[in-house]
Image 1: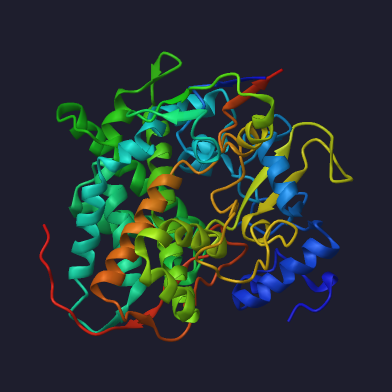
Image 2: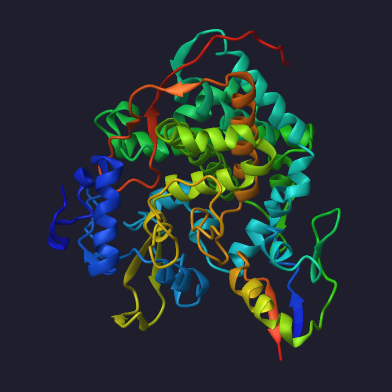
Amino acid sequence: MSTGVDDINLTDPAFWTQPLEDRQAAFATLRRERPIAFFEEPLFGDAPVGPGYYALTRYDDVVEVSRNPDVYCSGMGSTSVTDMPPEAAEFFGSFITMDDPRHARLRGIVSRRFTPKQLSKVMDDVAHIADEVIDDMCEKGETDFVADIAQPFPLLIICDMMGIPRSEYQTVLDATNKILGGGDAEFVGDDPITEIFGAGMTLTQLVNELADFKRKNPGDDLTTALINAEVDDDVLTPQELGAFFILLAVAGNDTTRTALSHGMHYLTQHPDQRQIWQDDLDGVTGSAVEEIVRFAAPVVYMRRTLTRDAVLSGTELKAGEKVVMFYGSASRDESVFEDPDRFDVRRSPNNHLGFGGPGPHFCLGAHLARRELSVMFRRLFERLPDLTAVGSPELLDPMSMPLVTGVKRLPVTFTPSARIGGR
Amino acid sequence: MRVSVDPDRCEAHGVCTGIAPDVFELDDDDVLHVVLAEPPAERWGEMRDAAMRCPKQAITLSE
């Protein structure tokens, strides 16, 4: 579709509903011909249209920007392309849209909970939940992979980690779908702005009720850690608590759901690669999971804002201007990755940017995501070895550039198998 | 060259322990230790690689 570099418009919602291959081809053109390309900004409700942004599509530029938060900051406006209006910041302005030192203090409240050994303590839970989720679909023979596997699995895990009772799972799911659905009418109807704010309000209310409960009944969960945390000698305000909770719930959900769904699709498209993985689960799982994250790049982009004038790969940028890092493009940069469009479950080295570039905002949940993907694919290979996607994934239908390359549905078939019983 | 790690930044991503397991070590609580703080010159390339690739920019090299 996109033939020349001038035909490419990343702001156009239609760009994001093209087949993945066409998008990848457009990004390859940008990397080659216009690696720092300027685009007009999308509309966001009736907010005034911003000044535009530079799209960074090469690996080295994304790394450079990530490594220099003093110049390319997160705390001016937002990390989404359009600035957040103040009423949105109330719900969605957590540490992802802050700079150090405050970012580090807030992140530090929970960061030790996400290290590998801390997570290995919940490893049994992850495996249990995987089996429980598979039990609910293993007798069907055909189903929707998103609804039955990719959606419930990370949701159950992040809700358990946060201490959210199971009775509230549907509320959390609906709210996160609205927040990260990119304005897809299936989730937000005709009035996305109202629906997205409503979802923020719902989650803020939920966590503050939960916080009241946890003050009386503390547990070994993230919500208890948050209400007991002191930052700058002060506890979190109800609003800060709400925004923190929304960030963890949203980020912990849609990203892994997207990676699982795209992963299932790639494995069906590349039966040879699937065979390699299935034949050597212990040897290949680690690299296969990295390759899925590189290939799927669930988080489409993050924005940074210039704190001062700077030159990036010869392009002069001014204070206040916006740069947007496209992680999927950077992770297919042919100057770094050999044969980047090949899905290779044994790829090595694989220093992809699917979890972001090196810097303060590197994905907090990277270990958790790796563990979730490893456990789920292993259990699926063991329990439903012929599980196969039929047809293409149905992608989000975004109003503008989506933050997550979400998958709404992916039909699969398999030989039915017996439940093994879980909790 | 001296290698040091900022414990407030480190989140145990394990990139450095993958590059140089005899220099960097994660203990049972996922706290990173530099067990060979002054590696010989032929290891400096690896040290620079570890510092560059640390997701949290927690590694400092001083000449």
